[in-house]
Image (cartoon, rainbow, N blue to C red; front, top):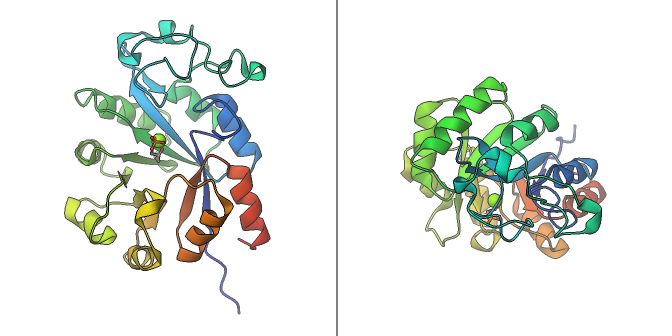
Length: 248
Ligand code: G3P
Ligand code: MG
């Protein structure tokens, strides 16, 4: 019997960021329509303690308003238009709360939540409380460049899956995971930092490898050939099509 080919996850970066306004429900809707298996998004904390989905610390680049997210309440943040800057057809998109994303994304789709800042550990606390309340522990993988923040998260909720984000030439990728002393679920390296041998070693150790951010078809093929577990891409439709062609 031919062994079933390993599934490579199509992970929509900030939603289908290449074709929709990043980190909006519109971008997540498009990613899902294009057949993604997972959504990557970024979170911050509002002034009134809500987990807010946005990449930057401020509203300046991706909305028609300005200012720091952490200086604003949800009511204030919701006044910003987060779609018009991308295209007029997206006018009216709002910055989503993490809670709204949980209500929108069906169970079974992995949600990779990237914590951009700890906010004095308040973000980790709010996130764990929310994930428990919405009963989405099984769908979530939380990643961060701040590995200390992941440690704190794991102390709050030992069952939560965590992923190390990094952009560095490390001696051993699996060794990096071991060095943290944490039961790491996944590695999220910049795609430039890994080769076939690194990936093979990680997979042998039971680690998922999800490089970011690959949009070029040739580079997607290289990553697939290297044996990655998933690819974080702005163009989930492109990757899905490529994988369908490859029978993946
Ligand atoms: O999670 C992968 C990737 O999103 C990390 O970088 O800046 O796009 O959030 P950034
Ligand atoms: Mg991110």
